[in-house]
Amino acid sequence: MALDVSALSDFNNEVAGELVVKSVYGGSTMEYITIQEGVKYQEPINLFEVDLYIQNANCSTTFSGSAAFSQRNITVCPRTSQDGICLKDLDKKYLGISALEPGSYNETFALAGAYSDLLVNQFQKANDQFLWQQVSGSASSFGGTCETDGLLTLLSSGSAGSAITDSAQIVASATTPTLTNLDAMIAALPTDVADRDDLTFFMSVGAFRNFVANVRSANSYYFDPNSISNRGGLLEMVYPYQNIKVVGTVGINTGRIVLGPAKQIVAGTDLMSDFSQFQLWYDINTDQLRHRISTKLGVNIAYPEFWVSNNV
Figure (spheres, rainbow, N blue to C red):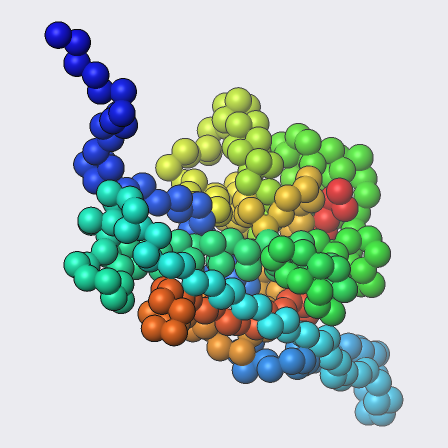
């Protein structure tokens, strides 16, 4: 006799496989720069410089020189993520057996840890995109309408004070980030910051990989693949100059490459722990598992005249 199984769905053991979460980001530009906490809306970066005047004099001298204070403001944007998921939707799925506790009051969620990690993971990626790509007054998925600019705008030729060099080699570094092209950017860097230990090339992840491939294909004797640090959305290696790092970040989505003292970038926020601590709770009124992440973030550069960019 024939066996008729057409009314049954094909078997799929939904709880047999391992749950693989979509984790996409690990590193952060904020690891390299200066953080200024306690900023509710706007605060200054206080700057101080001295112009020393030396003269040829014996007994009589003329007082000359200057000590100048100045400021560059950081305006922070309130950034919030909030959502709710109805756990009862899992009742219809076999996965609900492993994800939910018995009973109709779904106040516990076995995947809460993975869910929390993904929320922090995605928010960290959005923060890097905001730090680099935000344009004052424009709406975006990672920044919204906010009166502050990101680093790509601050380090462009239209930004006052930036040491932008438009030589052919530096512009070429957008598509062929070789040692020769990045050396040209180092040569254009003001000598006043040449000895700093926080000099950093920032570029896209794609440009970083091209740079590594170019160094490797050149058979450079100092190239060590183990020197590359891979932290998800951020890649790092030490340049042949020991006081210079090369960093690829998902915050940059163009051919832009910039070089300068990373600690002179100042990110303003209300409280640093807001980026890793957030609220996750069961709301009995809506029968949902809800989350809320709320931070403030803005950025500026203390001395943009010490930065070089290919301006792409």
